Picture 1 (cartoon, rainbow, N blue to C red):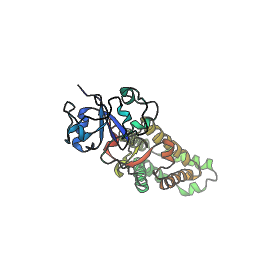
Picture 2 (picture 1 turned 90 degrees about the vertical axis):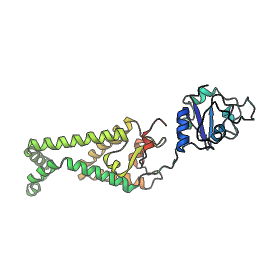
Picture 3 (picture 1 turned 180 degrees about the vertical axis):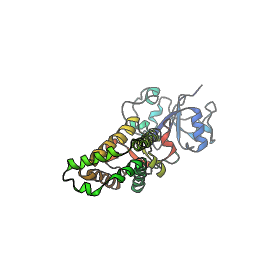
Picture 4 (picture 1 turned 30 degrees about the vertical axis):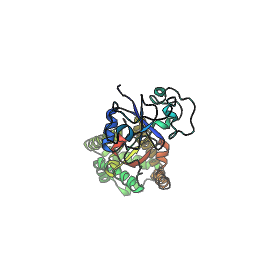
Length: 295
């Protein structure tokens, strides 16, 4: 009999289905333990991995595992060790565990890792990542800033008595900046922005987060979020909010929003600021397993 769906359980929670090859790989790597529970079609109830493998770190279903003495009419879902209070008739096993259930979907989000502890990114790591990203953007527009400052006249600005005159003076300076300088800064800025978006899409990390070894993940699965959350909510949407904040009162609203975000994160058990709460994400220490959505 070919076994295509094998299920595991640990600490009263279930994971799977896995193939036989995946089970043997996880046994060899230590991700699956001999005292974990296992079930697949053809077994009358859950058994420990050690029972069905004879204590070995390799499983071959056609070997003779220890047979259970439990009554044959009991479904594995009613196993007293896992579900001591559920003795009602169970639905078809394949329907229950072979597809996503309508109710209690959290039961299928369990992933068996050797180290399941989640380590949230510290405030200092997040602030350093922000600083690195800001520095990169400043470097990208450095030719434009140098040209602008070389034309800037503090005395002329001081003679401007209202906001409209200041705006007109700024436009006058901008019109005097060489086109080649503008093109260089625009090219560098768009190349940097493209690289940042690619990193965020592929890895859930900006360049600053990658340097600091942290990543944006889903707070339930601890995997990288979907495209909409990463690129639109956490990137484009937040950038637009901060740009708007920088247009008023010399950028004070943007600074206040940034300070509030880090204050909230520092006082949160999951290190979530309003950025994270709004986008339903969390920032954690980077781990290769977070990029693997097949397990």
